[in-house]
Image 1 (cartoon, rainbow over the protein chains, first blue to last red):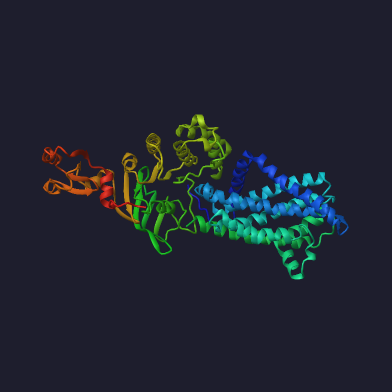
Image 2: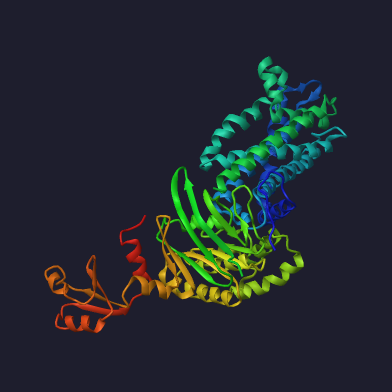
Amino acid sequence: MSQLIRCNIIPTLGVFQVWRRHFMVWRQTYAASLAGNLGEPLLFLLGMGYGLGRFVGEIGDMPYMHYVAPGILAASAMNNATFEALYGGFTRMTRQNTFHAMLATPLGVSDVVAGEILWAATKSLIAGIAIFLVGSLLGAFPASTALLALPVVFLAGLVFASMGIVVTAISPSYEFFLYYTTLITTPMFLFCGVFYPVSSLPDTVATIARWLPLGHVVSLTRPLATGLPLGNPFLHIFALIVFTLLAYSAAVFFVKRRIIT
Amino acid sequence: MSAIIQAKQILKQYNGVTVVDRISFDVQHGECFGILGPNGAGKTTTMRMIIGLAGVTEGQLHVFGYPMSPEQRLVPPRLGVVSQEDNLDIDLSVSENLLVYGRYFGLSARLIREQIPKLLEFAQLSDRGASPVRELSGGMKRRLVIARSLINNPELVTLDEPTTGLDPQARHLIWQRLRALKEKGTTLLLTTHYMEEAAQICDRLLILNHGQILDQGTPADLIKRHVESEVVEIRGCMLDSDLDCFENLPGRLERVGDTLFCYTHNADSVMAALKDHSALTLLLRPSNLEDVFLKLTGRELRD
């Protein structure tokens, strides 16, 4: 008649019910959400790809549009997962007390956290598919392997959602997120090879940028989308998985510390 | 039949500050047990320990015979939780809230679909199934939270201040629903600071103040134990000047602001002694839990 739910790190199948809940809520407002998913990266594609592209011309024998599109795909994965994990996660954890409601059921903290991360990564994937479709219409993804960039987008979503939940769990308020976006995600957006080759940075900075999560993501999406040779893809995938597992473990720890007192 | 909840000398400290101070009590199968106390008495903390959202610093807490500890959180599938704050999914409809919650318990879609109309009927929300939760009144939301806590057919339902902030009509409806639950044999544990609520639905209760139990028992026992059977409330302009003339009244006097309370077993003689003071307003009533509560916890304001 009773069951023990260990509050450990490995989620149960309940994680999918958490995901389904988020999906149900998203369905209520999906139109606005999709418009945002599509609109912003589309503006970046057009503004950067065509606008800046006119001045840049080509990078490494390819039109700037081809160069920048996989970067924007990667950056959008980061931004969507981060936004969902921070603002969506924080709202559910504090204002709506959704986490508390879930924890009054057989779900454990690991289910709640993993469900958040899985959902945020799903939103990255939804946005990624939207960009992929629009970008393909613009001819921005020329390679036949471009579709393989989408699983990478999902993996990127897992990484940045896990990191985001850690920040959410330790944030006193929404304002606190600005430290994270200013100090962590915006620098990655600007220095990890989304808009220009990391190699044009000073050596030390370039090395750091390559090892940051978004650096690994771009190192995968760009070759896949443009047809350039993939250098050591398993290293990048492995690094992203390690980042995810570390951040996820920290996220479970901090959410548990915040809610179970 | 052993107790559904057994608390032995449970202590809860946050950063060295004691919030719950070695309290012991048990909740028996099928009863409605109340935890009464002013704000900050430790009611919610006690509740959080029972539902596994807070660890016990010292002492033993068993729920359904299983030890509760912070590391090994026990969530009996036969526990229903009504939390103090509303934590419904406001973006979803009334029925969807029940559906989503049933899934958290791993219930099959078929079982949940069977349950939903029954729960809506119980909560008197049958015509509201498709309404978005954000359109419900406070009382409806509370009823939905209670209905939601029943989705897994729980043996024990914990309710943390279930009627705080509701108007009297909404509150009475909830009391009626809770009594219906009790009649079905569901064990109820609730916290409240409404004495009327405790008197209306609790079989037994304990009074908590500054984390300590002041007393516990049935409402009638507590009244008998701590206050005289009746009380005369005396108000009027002569209170200050003529305080002496009240001193000989056959009862225990307590002065609160502009009112003098005379607790007595002999209300007739109190009334007789005061009948000539026409400037006084007198109110004779039976003593109630509120008198016990105020006597035990004091009358100063709590923040």
